[in-house]
Image (cartoon, rainbow, N blue to C red):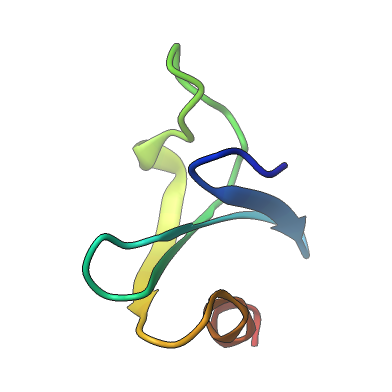
Length: 66
């Protein structure tokens, strides 16, 4: 699902969210579930990994799904 803020997708049973950082490129987070709160944000309690990529959005996705 693509929103104005982020791109969310499922890969191998995990849920990924990628968005552009204000400072450093792209941030990508990985969640065990796509459960959301009342603001439609993924729940931090389900986050299992994440990081910042100073390259492109494509670079960030390649790094996290490898």
